[in-house]
Length: 496
Image (tube, rainbow, N blue to C red; front, side):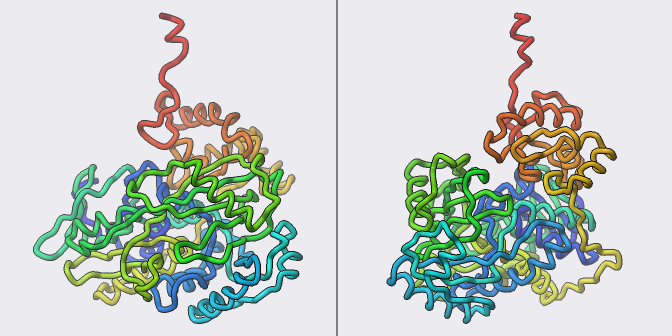
């Protein structure tokens, strides 16, 4: 496939790149979406707090604020068209004590300046009534009714699948190496799988967006500094938090929150540690203690014995100028067609609220291309609908019975904690964007995320993957090459 010419190449298949691909697939364009990892959405998009932010936090006048509020408004229609789970539950910024309560009005005014609707100031009694587990010292909260929760990877896979169904070519394990530049015009890219020519390239490389733009000679001063955030996940059978609870934000972050998830688990986190390594997702005792102490200030009744997992994610924080240069942490998004080179749409520093902003960023990319003279013609057969595959645990008993009668694989439970069936796993292996590793199936079906953390299902999933892909079990990996589960058959050792 190398040496083929495309209209648009998109570098990076996280939530922003996948949304850009989906919105551009509406037009008569030959589009290539490349991803360096073995699956899409393996960067910042798969390890975050899974919140659709209302938009009161970004500084007024910033691109972050504009994209956040516009993106938030798009999620209801997107969830309907792309069939991913989304609940507009609202969120709370919780004040503990009178001093913090005084800061809520400032946050509300900021939200009003950003155009955030549906914000309500609550007193302590109101908050205690709505969330019985809240710290009894609560003095009040700012409730934003437009806040929501989702499964961020489901958003990525839904957008990318819809893009592929509408003609976009996706290549995984394909890493960007350099641009092909003629004069001052970018005419393609070099990758580990050869060269691809194009009229436009979209830099949506997330944590690596600074390195990509530097290859084009752009913004040499721009740097992505990963901000690590660590999290605890709690057993949903033991702890139930009904709401999204933020603390009053500091000058450096939104703070450590306590929130429910679309899957019913409670999670706490994140902290915000600036690091240099763009791949360092390790967790530390110090970091976990920091988020634990922060969470206890909101919900003192949390019990660490019910924590079933810890993880860390990285936010691609950039140093682009913000609307208010005196605010260190609020560096703004970069969304531009730079003048220094032709043929590039440059996106950078898309950290939180990047998930919420992603559809609005995609629309902005379309607008930028139109402004640059692209005559985008709509496809008469473009289909905005992506059909979701059956989720056994969410179905009524009669629906489950009919599903099993149609395909007996749906009658075999592979993950007991999350009630994931063999039929669901097989469907994901043969989906429009195939799941070829254990983690790829885990992200799509949520198996292995319950109390036993995959202890029961892992060997069965390895067996199913090998069978369906027609390969040896020795080739089945957790997350791609280098993470294979098995070394050799045990019978070989016995034979020796």
